[in-house]
Length: 573
View 1: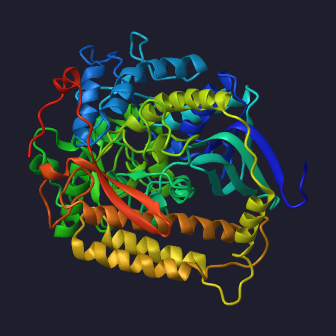
View 2: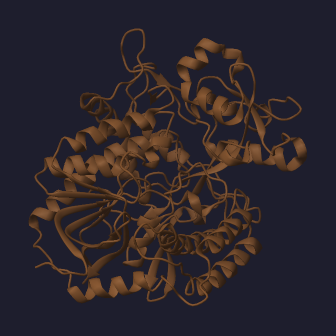
View 3: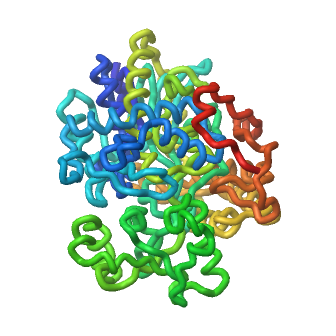
């Protein structure tokens, strides 16, 4: 029965997010016989996956024949500093090659070796050349390919829809409520299963490689609905983002530049990675390179715009234009720099959230029945630090897994009805942001939050800063009650900002609390007051919602089976 206040849509599988993870899940769920609806808050094809440039990590052994899944497994566990879920990593390493070949069958075009095999490039902390790529536009090729697959199936795709809440009863998800940005129409999605595939939360910081959509909506929706969060202190700073001009500050400079032979120099012309990491140099782990750059800048050896130099000009024009066409265009158009002749200015930029929704490694289901998570919204694969190229492998491997698991769950599940009252209560909550008396501006509060996150929870953290940050966030949460904008629901970016700010405040608090709790330095989380790694902290921090409060718990990292343990070097303390 229709309701004049809102529209109901019934579906077996509702996927929130239309990036690589969401689209791969949609294709799989549909092929398993489920009805599938994908919603995206931005336009289809505008997903953050497009920003992943360097390649997909998969041990094909096409360039270095000695590579195999066991080495990839070991590299991933070591890079995650031993707090990844070993089962998720095992699946990632074993299945990534098949997913790459499958993507090729779907129509993706990879760069080739002279023998017509898939070309693979070097990336930081990978033992072998492992990244399958399409120049430096790999993410774009993935989105193009998966979008085409989704559009050729009977999958309902709704872009410019903002989801405001998940509906959960008796620890089982019933669906979600949101509004269409173009019309202001409220939609209640009744779904047997929901997959969160809405990415990370890079926009929580001032300088980030992430596109504007990445405000943690999916992670926050799941947390508010009662899902357990994991590793929320672990956010990755990519070593190389653009620093000039200001309009493009933070825009990613792919690791592919270093993978193809680019070197880092300080303002004096010293190749400083020879000091910080004499063996691996520019291709050490991302946290190591990012901290090295940070130290050079704060010690006064940075460039005039507060970065360092990245130089690949010695490789020659033809090589650079063939291997890194996107980077060539990016610097030429945005910075007026010709990277075939001149150096790039770069500095660390917030890039990837290793933390997120805790999931079952076999199904990608959260602790809420019928609620699944995949891609950057899910935790567990990358531990304390992500290997470059593993995010694209992750979304392909677990996109397939989650689509299969959600379709299976939906087949066994009865249709559940979201009551009219539940939807009307949510409509009232949405409308409460509109036309308040003397509202707090959501944009200025967002700026204040980003400023505080960048100042107090950046590359290097300490107890005083984190306590200051928590105090500020809790003060902002009080002010958030008075946030509001004028106008109606239709085409109102200010209203969207109100909801995004709510998500960012939620995640900022969880990040700060978890960072305060982890009294050691591990991977992307570096504490100047606890600069060493500690055996006692070989565990995951969990965040659980209890009423209006957050409770932290810890979970010991699951012991690896002996056959996997012997693949990985002993952890050094």
